[in-house]
Length: 500
Image (tube, rainbow, N blue to C red; front, side, top):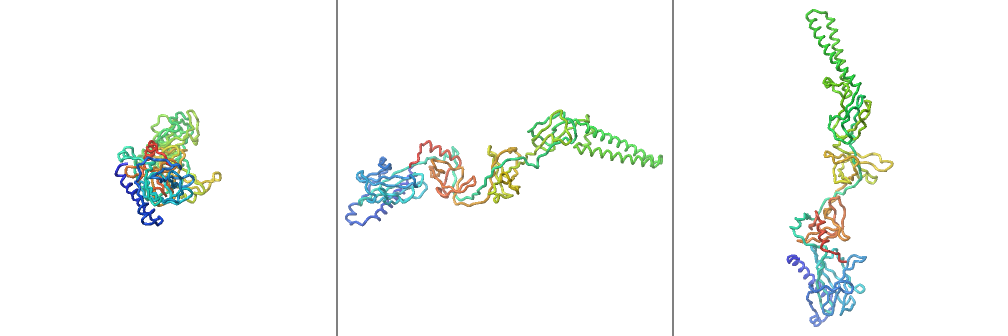
């Protein structure tokens, strides 16, 4: 630890020692001025003495014939200080001395512990919060003398410069107030938009002679799906061509008779007859054209055909071929389904809504849809909720329309839907990607100058992105967010262990 970081800790320790001495002296039984003047000793701080383990498994500190053993006990209880007293290495009653301990931690105010006798030890009056990483100052009064020691206990802490943070991509954020939008999670499945499903039928009976498209292919509007040979269509085309020629002939006769009648060469009756025949020819052509249009044929295109029996079945929309029941040589009626083409530019996400959630889910709510098997995510609005609960599953269905221009959503995909139901303001929150598991804690790594140290948290509500902090981190504290697992890995490499 560098000198700059040591200064505030040393100051806190000294203040703690002074405060402890003041408390001890305040609580001392009144003695004569002569005895007090000759017996109070301010033992030198022994922060550099070699660590010694006492009979109870704690740290033991000794000056002259007097020793204190400091332990942190946490079996079945919250972590607590227990202090044992010794004279010449023999355990003495806890009420023969008074002890205070001051702890200073990174980013925290100093914490002062007073003690009371319990059984054969002195029990601290507070919880020793995790992690047990601190600088401790001990002050003890025994036989009208005051002793003090100090020690360091470091765990789940690692030094990391700003340059290192940038290099490994660790993002540092600040804990503070936030608005949490808890999300109701519902399972669901992606299906085709039923309004975009188009069946394709021949519209004229015939034999399939070519089938160039396969199941699962994407097609554009107007692409040829199959080529048929149809005698009925040949007859209709022939009728149209014949009606067209008759109309042309009727026009010629009409124009000639009209001119002759105007020149007084022929009788009016002959002129009227040709006029009637022209009208009949026009009606016949219109009827033949209507029959062709009824089966999807453009009359004007018929005149360009070389083979009147062949006709092409084209896709009515751009989309995906989802069914194909046609093969070369098969005979079909005009209403037999041979293909199904689906426009997949939008899809349905049908979510299962349980009875307990029916009052929460409403039309118009925004929902986030996530695939359970792939990193695919989309958003949409609830457009429909079934009014009837399924008698078998006892659930209802809520439908969201998903944009699928990229083609990532596929029919049959299992998804989870997340619906925002309320907004909650909380005083302290952190990003959920900052959370890590360390030992048996859920932690974030607080940033203090050049150090990161684990901060076990008590957590509240979340919306999948941010989470409420009830205990363990204060507003304004910095913490590692993105790539925080790298800090956990570094702490693991350093061999850090939790001190019980």
